[in-house]
Image (cartoon, each protein chain N blue to C red):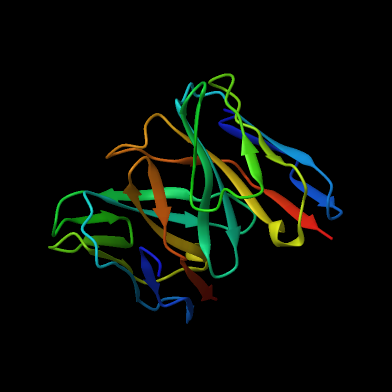
Length: 114
Length: 109
């Protein structure tokens, strides 16, 4: 039972470097999302997708890009990393974000930007 | 200002004690979810409450949705070290699930 798989689990970057956080789910969920978690601030939504080919911005989208070419994959790209992007990133999926929708989370990717 | 305000931010108690944590808002919601997150893992859904005044029980955890559907509480009876974690409430807001900042619970044995 893979569920939501995130890679890498840990990453250290230098300011200005780029990288992609990978997220894959095997539950055939239409809805996928990326959150970042910082101490005292809970989970903040970065980007989300309601289906292949459709993406939209969340609460804190600046500095991040996403694409959704397949139902299974939803990568998050940092084009030019900044220390403010040091955080733990969670990918989550749901059959639907509707009334009874449950988000299934990956185990997280801890990113440090020096 | 955050859509959801959770209190307290941090709670440290002894095994066997009872506790209540709160999730408050000035907005009305059609439903509210509670998640628990253990260190190094992603959040896991505990319960969804839908009806104003609804009470749901999950073993020693009791969840209540306010009559006006603006707030919710989570009560834990006889807390155990295994209850340690971050408790998050969340509501649907458009096509998004918005979370509160959470309550960190530490239960000492």
